Structures are given as structure tokens and as C-alpha cells.
Length: 315
Ligand SMILES: [Zn+2]
Image (tube, rainbow, N blue to C red; front, top):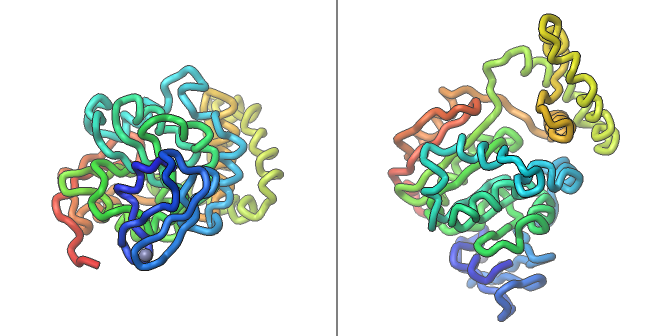
């Protein structure tokens, strides 16, 4: 944990400021305490506001085993940079000097990109993926990670210029409430960008509901091995005339890179929660939390909005 993170951290219980019992600039082990006496440990370089990973344990497994798969610095490609650009309605160059929250950061794939464009990055995840993220990008200046609950983000209200939750809210027990709690940490004039699964494809939704009844109960290692089936099955699922038959039976990832295919297939079948949403519904989340200038973005369902009103009822 870098000391500079303290400027934006707040106690998730009473919202007061936190101090740390260390004089170091990079703190590996320590204790954060608020003015009311609530305490939280810093372990393995990361402030921990939750004591275990609860419903996100599949992501702890996933990002421990696929720690580098989606990192541009590892693949030599620009998929993650492109994914981030597709989630914004301004060029990446305008991230310069902004403070960015990546809620549900996983192994922190966006950290190195956000940092390269001159912004300060804070990655938050409920799962132990933050340990993978810290190993990937914790050494970069201006990059921070916290392990915390999206329903109780440990940050000052209005702290962030940009908050993003890309492929995250649909893995929480209550996506609308998660959106609401995230909206509080966006400053007036700041932006929030999200991507959730598209409820439009009824075949995918029905399929997923059917198979996930079984797959979410499988031991993670078994599901991990089964996910390798996506490597050869790709050729059947993408057949010119018959592919749709297979695609309507079960989801497998159709990423070109076979490693991504294994990862995305595991990512589909393993999480405890998976929900599906429409643009209309997501637009409503933005409106009810004081956002305007809401734009629909390309990856479905994605929208970005600008906050115009601070939190209505002060706590
Ligand atoms: Zn407190």
C-alpha cells in the first residue's frame, strides 16, 4: 500500500479518515485505524476491508490461475487498451491527471494502461484477485489496490473523476444496489462507465441458466479442466452453417486466443452470481443516481454517464 492512497481512503463503517501505523511510503504489513477506532489490516501490501472473499471465491481462483492472460504487456497485443477505450467516450489521452477507480479490478488488467496514460489508478476487488493484481502492477507509481466490498467502498464520497465496473455488477447479488454505492464515490462532473451482460439474447440466457445450475457446484479444478474443451470445440462452434446449432446448446468462448477461450469459458460457468440486463434498465440506474449525458457504448450492454448531482441524502 502506498501512503498516498490515504488521501482518498475512508472507513467503510463510519466514513471518517484513516491513518496507518507505519512511516514507510510502501507499506507491506500494517494497521489502518479510523478516528472512531475501527481497524483494518494491511496484508501483503494491500489494505483489507473484508476478511474473506465470500461470493467472489471463483474469481480468487480464476485470477490466481490466469494472472497474466489478459495483460497487454504480456500478450504484446492491445486488447486491454482497446477494451478500455471502448468503455470511454473520450480518447485515452484525456485520462491524464485523473483519479480512476476500477471496481472489480480482478488481476488489474487495466492498471498498466490507465497508468501509462498518466492517471492515478485504484483497483478494488472483493476477491483475492487483488493479490494477483498487486503482483502484476503494484510496483507501478500511481497504482493502488484494495480488497473491499463494492456495497461499502472505502473511499471518500465524490473522490473519483472516473469509476468503472466493466463486467462486474452482474456478478454481484444486487447489481442495481452495487451501481448506487459506486455512484457515491464519483465526483460531480465525473463519470461512471459500466458493462453488464446483455439480456437480449434469450438463447444464451436460457442456456446459461440451465448449465450453470451444475457448473457453479463443480470443484473449481474440475471446471478449469472442462474449460479446456473450448479449445477444440471452437472449430465446431464456428462452423459456417452448423455452428449456430452448437452455439444454441451451450456457451463456449469464441476468442481467437485459446488461452482467453479457456479463461472466458471458466469465467462464464464459475461465478456464484450472473445476471442479465437491458439498456433501458441500465439507463434507469444512471438517471436515478443523478447522472446525465448518458451514452450507449459498443460492448453490449455498456453505458457511460456524467454525474451532475452529489449524493441526495448525506450520511
Ligand atoms: Zn470508522
